[in-house]
Length: 355
Image: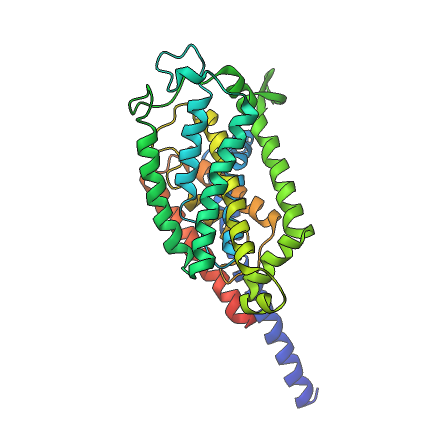
């Protein structure tokens, strides 16, 4: 073999090794999570039983709409720290409007129990209004979304603290929900056999989450708004020159995100069942972590709905698994923080390599 052939063979081998290393590193988070799932299954064989998997699926469905909303903000190279408090506020409002008339400490006894569609519209409208507020300040005054949504987070928390003390509630947990509300969210039309003659129901909000994910996929991939969102996230100046209305697109992205938080709050109102000012606390951390795991890039203009679904699912797998493995609850936030840092570091590495 000539020297030239040897050099070419060495270069090819080096290229293949580098390619394999890059592939391994780019998917390191997925690999580590799969490894963690295997370890947890060994520690607790009940982890991947049908009943446990349905629990994981249900938790995934509960957090998915919020993650879908935050993902749009991240596509615009931003984020939304107000998501959790928006969920808490809309959850408490939804629960207070759908308390049973027989509840002794019914918050608003004079209005009875409102129809469910009306409360859904109220919750999503409140969330969308919060999103419009955030998007306007981001687009109009060129403020970083981190600062804007941090301020909004504090404002919403104050509103939430004030709201739970209104009416006949007096700061108590908002509970005693109407049966129609519980049935609409936690009821089930399908149950999965789990052995020994038992079955585990799949709650209705799982199907609602699948529907919302489908709608968001259509908006992101098949509408002019979706194309403008990705164009704006990739290069704002180029998007503006191409005729994209930067202000309107930014406001709509945050408004859509807010509507998703409103829906999440409506679901949480019934799922939690006893709502306080702590409802929704730190939900934005789970949403951001799921998005970065699912490949939504903070450099902007990159993200897919299926990636977000996978990200939320993997995160729920890990957190449920840690509980079943009897890991100290005080370490959960350490795990969340580590996942976010590691995922963001990998994302930035991909961006720098590509650049």
